[in-house]
Image (cartoon, rainbow, N blue to C red):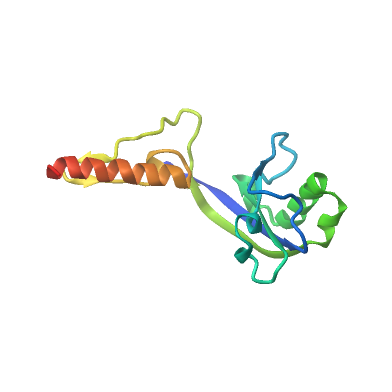
Length: 152
């Protein structure tokens, strides 16, 4: 059964200096715009910016990811976070994935069974939480189930 999906996008900006220091994920707790979280990737590793300076990514899940005016809307939101200097940031790229995450409505229960038949297993973030962590955890649960079946 196809659970459906939702879009996801990432807007990448470069700037001479990071607007914040440290390895942080900044969350929008006020729902002030489409970006739900932001990370300065060059604070994780300076190698992420081959051009020097800083590289920031804003993550946009859901319907907002498909907005044709996504980049200027995100830029305006981030100006509220970081100030007028955001106007000078360079947009490096905008990545939009139409089916970026499985749809997990409020009634969804994580940790769906990974064994669907006597000899069929399935894994992915659609079996757990719609995230990289969910995909990895589902893969681990699948591997453990297969090993038990094989008697290993």
